[in-house]
Image (cartoon, rainbow, N blue to C red):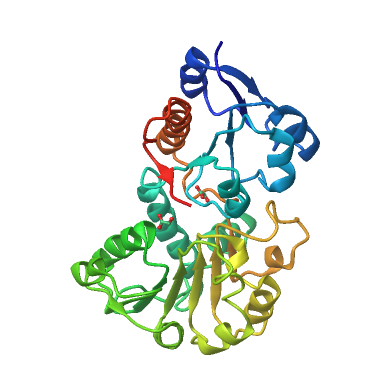
Length: 321
Ligand code: GLV
Ligand code: GLV
């Protein structure tokens, strides 16, 4: 008898086929997140769960699953949607997908930084709607990366690869902050500073940190006030690291110059969010890892995490909780 797995979305035929070769698979096949009721109903009695960052896995879901559940694999690097304390209590192993999305996410972070600072969406909109009257000396201008100071909050795999890519833009100073100085900082030529110093000195502030109780709302009124009025803020981590109302105030009052967000609170962001009315804000729909190759690799890795876990073998990417 094959182990049973619940999969909370269609993650592509290659990954699903591999999983079906070894397991009895039930899939939520709609193109929207599984409802809480469906999740709770379908996870009951399963041996493994393959979920996405849109699924909140807490004690209610774990209780509904019952004692058969041994493996959870999330198709994401972030795991703030998982209640790891409750999962650990039940001796469930967790797989996730670090590394394979680092390049795609770093690329998108740089793209979003440039789109925000060089006003790409605003400019394109002007061109399309007749706002482009003539080439003008200071029209659609923004800050340059060259000779600037860039601060990275969360110098993990993704933060480091953002730094690596930005070096080719002739940055003057690369700063980072986090728990401690890292050897990779020295290698890349980035300087470890306090969060305060980073906020005060940086022309570009980039958040690539994980969402934890410690980083929740770390970008708040006070943080934005510490930043330069010319600063550009970019977030490709989680919406929860930002006090979004404070950000809206900062953008309206020009406490900072602009923001580029791949992540928001909530997701999707309501179309009447004030952020959409601010010309100095670029909002993307959480697409940092969205290259075809990366998403397929994430799906395959999630399946391999499940298959190894079910066989009591070392998962390719186990999250140690
Ligand atoms: C995306 O945000 C991820 O955590 O993989
Ligand atoms: C965070 O998980 C990272 O990969 O930087």
